[in-house]
Image (cartoon, rainbow, N blue to C red; front, top):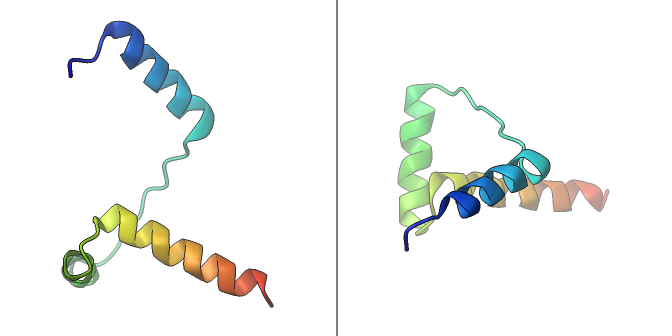
Length: 63
């Protein structure tokens, strides 16, 4: 599917309103370990990090 200019504009506007990028610096050895674990679980690195954060937030909200 080829994205039209209108679609690109809509996506850009959505991201500007609803998405916050959070850069993450980590040691290369930690990144390689994370990458391996994410691959083992069939997830992307981004998906793995998001799930880990969501699980921790859920646990801590129950305190």
